[in-house]
Amino acid sequence: MKSVTHLLIPLSFSIFVLISACKENRKLPYYGQSEIKEIKKTDGSITVDTVYRTIPDFSFLNQDSILITNKTFKDKVYIADFFFTSCTSICPTMHRNMKSIFEEYKSDQDVMFLSHTIDFKYDKPSKLKKYATKLEVDGDKWQFAYGSKDDIYNIAKDYLVVVMEDSSQKEKYVHQGWLVLVDKNKHIRGAYEGTNDTAVAQLKKDIQVLLAEQK
Amino acid sequence: MRSKLIILFSFATLLIAFSCQNSDQLKQQMYYANGRDIYINRCQNCHGAKGEGLSKLSPPLTDTTFLKMNKHLLACLIKNGSNTTLTVHNVPYDGKMPDNPDMAHIDIAQLIVYITNTFGNKQGFYSPEHVAKDLKACNKAE
Image (cartoon, rainbow over the protein chains, first blue to last red):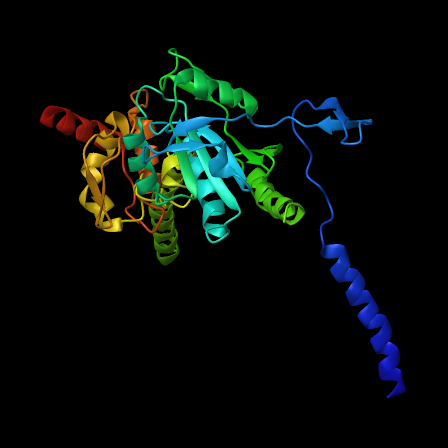
């Protein structure tokens, strides 16, 4: 009997160590240039703080022709990307992967998705609606954004994604396939190649880390 | 002596017959392997690594009946793309499939051998000559 309790103590200790080692304690980085700003406190003294790059205010039409703004994504962790509906190169793979994340977080109110179309000529909201319906993700959780060329192409820069028109290409548009992870304070906390399975698996892990940080 | 000769002869005949069959099999395997590379490069984005398609946007390639009934149209679909509604697994797909005008008959044949012998399909060999015939028929029909 005594030998059993002797065994039990180190055993439970090692289990405890193993479990605590499994817990991830890492923190996601902040993307983009940060600024050092002087902040005036209420008592008049001045302190220094680091201000991270944020996604600026925006307003676009969604697939239901309803105005969506940065307020739509208030207190949400969201994944943003740039695509167009007639794209047959990287977009289907990006959205196949994004949809698998969408399915995982279907019931999580803190997670949203935002896809911007860069085909401002053809992808009117009605086209986006058709696309969302066919992808079987139509609803409030995954927003599809339509805007003027300037608005969309400018916000792409804020998400650190390269997009452009290129008439020499068969499909007329060129863009990078990043899935950009944005936190509740509109900071970019990760960017993942949406066509790469390893990167997408990392994104799935990182969302959890971010959600735990910003509970 | 004679019986020994007969045994040797029949053995040789068997060997030849066997190796003939093997070269056919080898040819199909070669087509299949090349077809898989083409599939990964040109088709997988929309139709998926397992031929599962993408929701209601791109049809799956697992409808063995569809692929059997429409085998004579596959070469045209691949080369010229599609603008019409295709019904696969009882689901209508009205999206546009891009064309592949740069693909040679042999490439199309290899791709068709791959598609029609994977994802649950098992239709055997398909030759470049057959591709030429099918393309001619559908270009005439258009």
